[in-house]
Length: 411
Image 1 (cartoon, helix red, strand yellow):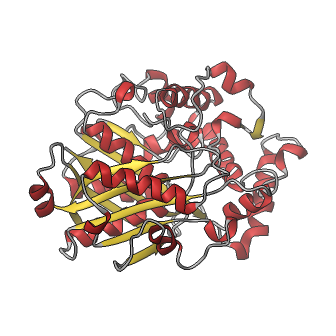
Image 2 (cartoon, rainbow, N blue to C red; image 1 turned 135 degrees about the horizontal axis):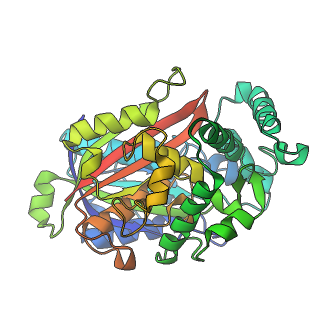
């Protein structure tokens, strides 16, 4: 559906390792910041959608995650809808919140994403990621990933350990990267350049998990995770929360929002079985979002996309129509996606440097893009940005993501 909802305020925590903070503390910090940014009180909220992916595995909190987090702030009585959709949990929460406002059911709602992934037992964290595939086929998937890595020349040690020593999703991204390199001539240097770019962007973001600037040479020299991915080419685990207060057009007018940001389109879909050469989930979502918003890829000024790995960013350039299929490497060579380039991508530092607390990631993208469109992104500011796009996917089934949300924001 076409949307007509507005961002009244945003807030988020710094992403990182917060062993001393639980879901309630992290969520409360983000919600408080968003309400303050909107100039509203908790009592103004009429409903809330709360995204989280892994609390059941990491903390043991099940069933009423959103109610627990919000009650700690004194927020009750209102409908609270818990949203779990892998790495797309927060963007799904936003999608649902905006849809309800557009439909006229509410005037002021909250979308929150909150996650804790750090745990004393790393196996618990990896278990959370391994649950984001078809677990009935898990062993078959792991065997296939190992065979793919070995066939590419990886050593036995490099090809083993998926889901045990690292997130199995890095092996999934590594396999996709190798296929892209073979078909289009993309190089590992292209992936390293993306990591280096995002490290520069992240160095300008006070809420980013990692703020060290890396060179291409440093990225290439880092420890190997899953060939060809070195450590800086892989998004880290993290803890954190991000929130947005969403209002109707009527409420936005009543509040007299000085710099209103409109959610012009938000397309949410699940994957399906399709041919390798057919348009995939991201392509279909992006095409529909552009149509709903009445803009095209050429109109976008700034993008936050799901760079869970450096190759994922490059391939998303192509899926979102920022360049033709197979030309992602050329876009990197041109510097088009760097600050100052034609279409800056992941000015926050992206998942690679800002961090990736999976249930909060989608709304963290909205925080960055809202601040960009309002001209308050500081040293990361994209000049005259008026159209922004967020791309947030999650899980994996077959040859594609399990869930995808593409959102377009305008000023």
